[in-house]
Image (tube, rainbow, N blue to C red):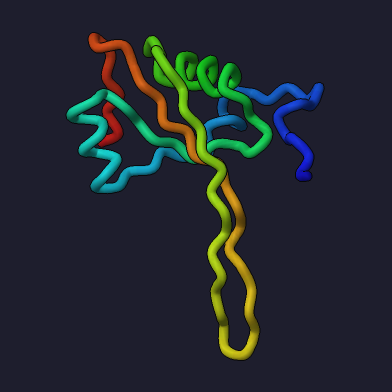
Length: 103
């Protein structure tokens, strides 16, 4: 069984928790329709840390946080096989009166 990375005594700053927003066609559809925004986050961050980081960085009110651990994909470069890194995705639902403008 894998070790749970979120159970550490290490504290992360908000800019270390949220690595980048995921601006995709599907993500923009969710933002417009359901007020949900996707971020790539640190694998060691828990839902409470993600909530605090998004509220502090973007000055919004977060209603709910859903997370996904995304597995790396197999890739080939010339004669060598490898995998891309595994990463964590957070889908953050905001209060209806708040918005985040990426552009």
